[in-house]
Image (tube, rainbow, N blue to C red; front, side):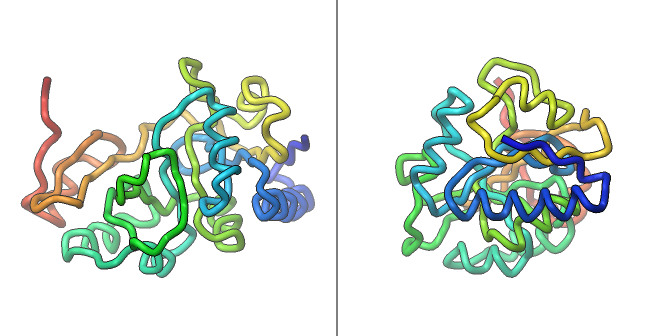
Length: 215
């Protein structure tokens, strides 16, 4: 288990290389995103995703982070015009979209084969550099179920310990709103979780987006 301070150029280079190697061999890493610290694994290694869920002591579907808009095209069969417009407007950034993934993809994200996936491209240079070398990663918040979100990689390490091989520290304390989640699998785009991007901003791009259902 190693922790690297990515605010220091030499440690950043070493840390990103170590994180990429860890993901490629199926280990877990913690890295900063633009919203929270995330615990991540190779999305196509089933045992690695299972290790991620075990580390979090949680069993629920894991979102996927990508390092480029082009990577998304390889994960889906087709994208609606609404999805394309939202991605163009808000990626990289705090927007998670739920889309139907290509049937040919061989992965298990803990969703029981639902055929859909939550995807985001984060706006953080460290995360993007890792993702562009590893390809799509299953990434969830770097905390155990029921525990507070970590504001630093060191706080994440206090919770996750040796279940993670590499921790990448940012120079900023993260205490930001979560990403906004929009479901694009139905006829009408619908906000499932309000977050950093407001409904008003979303409707400037796709006026038909529905507000989240209220209990």
